Length: 315
Image 1 (cartoon, rainbow, N blue to C red):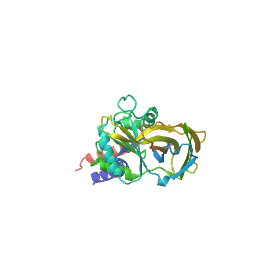
Image 2: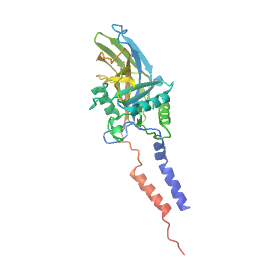
Image 3: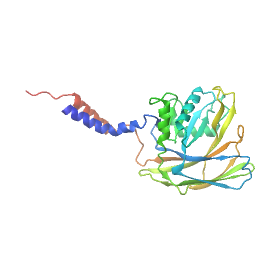
Image 4: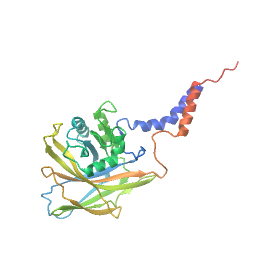
């Protein structure tokens, strides 16, 4: 009876830890700080197609999107020499199917002479947001890696569940957990040499119950398709190629304008302009840990000892 009671008490104490671990059955956590402490955060946003030729010299255009209707954001680290990137991307496409998703491909650039895409800004964004999570597996930038809604991390080609399709499908269907509501507004005015981009998040409300919410706006320029027949993985047509990634800085945290040089497209005229909000919850009570506290560990250890060690019999 004493052994059974100890085991039951141990199960009750560990239940929150087990539930927490179960959320990572299909994915890993995507954000950590430099000390390896998990960060609660992610990304929301949306993109619009922008034809540089037809919109040249046009009047300012305004775009508004509500957080509740924004697509799933899928950020992928890839390379033109990466064969596993092709097969895992095909599986990801099957998982996404007809769901609303915005896909962004970061291409290997630093110390890479085989991939013609990418630049310093794209590498810097990836490493600043997901580099610590990636480094826990291998390096800060490793292909293939996929991050869904800035929250759920999928590394390599080995599934965490029965299959990669199950992993990706669960991750995509999970949806964003951003504690946000309201809308993002941004405007675009194209001049001869640049894009004047305005952004406004004044209507965004947060629903954080503990800690403080930090919001960081970003502008991403993506070429939807680029023909490159010399890639070692023989893909030839590389989709959703991230050309540039820029944090939108302003004296105001709610709105601002930025002057962006017209991007040089690889071929065609299939530019997509994506507005992102990187969000994170800043804890006011110290870092978060995925392990139980030392006090809990002590109690659990004591209970386990109680379950194994019997008291001496009295005659």
